[in-house]
Length: 270
Image (cartoon, rainbow, N blue to C red):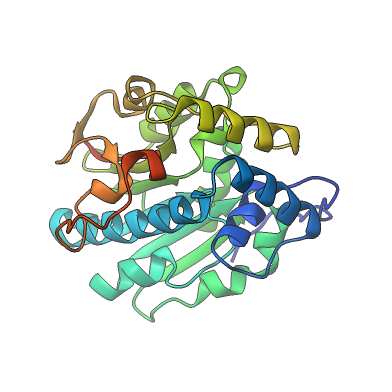
């Protein structure tokens, strides 16, 4: 395990990872996170469903990359507080030799990082404390962990992360920079909230997050698609995440796109 020096926990404002933990029914959050999550859920009561669908997409995308594309390495940024099954458990259930590096900027995630370290004997995992808005430092820390081989394909996992990176940070340059260090055959698996299906509701959600000290920028389908420029999108393309290769055929009881409002896609670098 490698880590940067952990900062003191900042409980004066909400953090997206801890709000997400609340939406998933976890216990690893503070009052400020719960209060912010309740405000956001007041704007859109379906946010817990969105959180669960985000998690389910991560599971499916990981299996597809391992089973169909031979991926054996993952860099998961914006890991969040561990919730089983974690990405490495899904990947290693398909490929026991899979290697995973997790990265997050919330010191509370570091506190529970041992949950992310329970690798198979054939594989390996590591956790680093790093911020996606400083991608050069993040990649240096990943290389320092000596877990991933950057001469072999790596899946870059950016789930429910980039809508927390607003335009002043140049999110497209960040993603391009991360992909540039990965070899041919690598992948980008990501999802991103969108206001396309219900602009009024998601504008109110954005206000709730930003007002709680966690700025967000939800993006349109065309803007999210820009993250995949130069990659070969796997079928069915960039779609609402519960429609990305669902585990069971739709039966008419699944949530609507407006309920979820989370676009998801997987692209391969060639």
